[in-house]
Length: 170
Image (cartoon, rainbow, N blue to C red; front, side, top):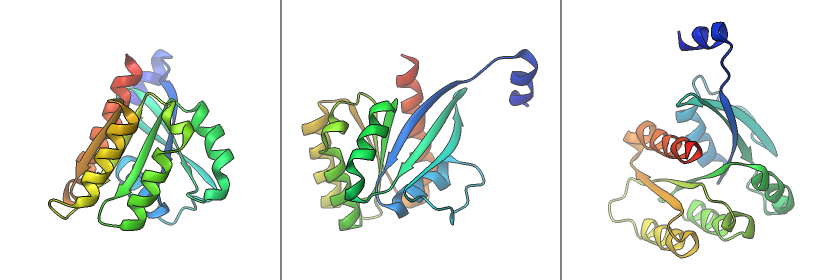
């Protein structure tokens, strides 16, 4: 109903590009919980866009290939994005290593709006602590770290999206 009201009144939503990084399966996990009717078989390589409507804003989530050869392209996209979401599965060593490598890239260090969406079903997982330490060392408080269990994935992902929207409104 709100979209009808928006069309009738001629109001426009603010649009922001947000880069989504991580292993493909982790990106799909975030997209599945943030985009209604998301098709899990959609190709993410080397680049894809999906639109998420949240808090009256249109967030264009740009999923970028996790291939290291695309470092330059990733840097260009991230430089133009309003924020960055890192999707990580703390129960997977390769996912954690990829996230830490991406967080350590120079283009990441210049962003002010960064969310790490970290899912883990293992209580006290050492990888979670390692990720938090990395975020604290690099982010100096500007990285929002959201930990959630698989059973609460929808809430965890939306908490991260709402945090981004609130930061964009400031």
